[in-house]
Picture 1 (cartoon, helix red, strand yellow):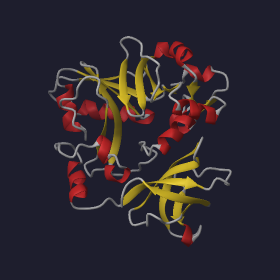
Picture 2: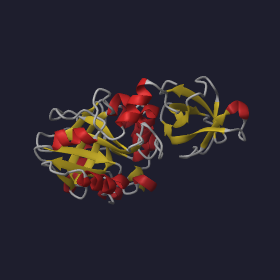
Picture 3: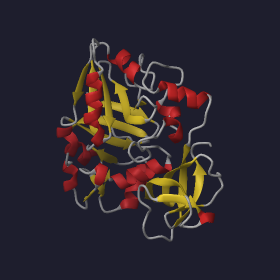
Picture 4: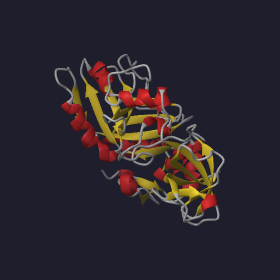
Length: 321
């Protein structure tokens, strides 16, 4: 869905998975700095919005998700995953319950498959699943923001800021009153800095939660009875994940950032060496310069110098090997 905020001066549309909102509004680093100071907002209105209502909503979702939500308190934000039978990540959801409905936002391209899966699992439970994307837009307020939420708007409060499920018809008015508006490039740079994984960027068809550090935020290790739980327990208790997420400081002399999927190799082996991972997200940070997240093999030494394509990279550990 195309955001009305793309009509703002300087707006440059994002591409790919983030099509429909602005990549930036002409001032990438000032936009980042404003967010870092707790000012402005980010238009995430392209994200899917799914609502689950009904008396059994929490107990039912508890059976499907990796997170413990059977007694989720109203207003308490959480994250959750849906896994395949083999424990691979299929969906990532950002949840909050308002006392009568669980609201979640998800990656734009996943909402159809997610809703289809949820509908197929309803059975005799008293739940209703609704796609509310056409009616509600997600707006992100950075940590420290003093901007308020209009009456009746559901809010997810997290350490990284607040996500508002704002009526889509109110998006332009709210942005005009609580700007400046920052684009996705600024938001993504701060996400990379915070080492926060994103479905479809840090994941592929065989990613398990342990590889990305999602065990700490989106998986509850003391609950069972969800698809893929056997893999989660086995790797946590007996094994080690085959890959691990790392944070990269990229050589700032390069003009172009390595894109998603760019091979990562050991610098000692050169640009023709064996691939030991790939870049998941890269960004230009207002203080750190060019940075990236990458997924590498678990046995890569934590102090090894790397190459992201042709770009030299120093790594910081995100997930311990």
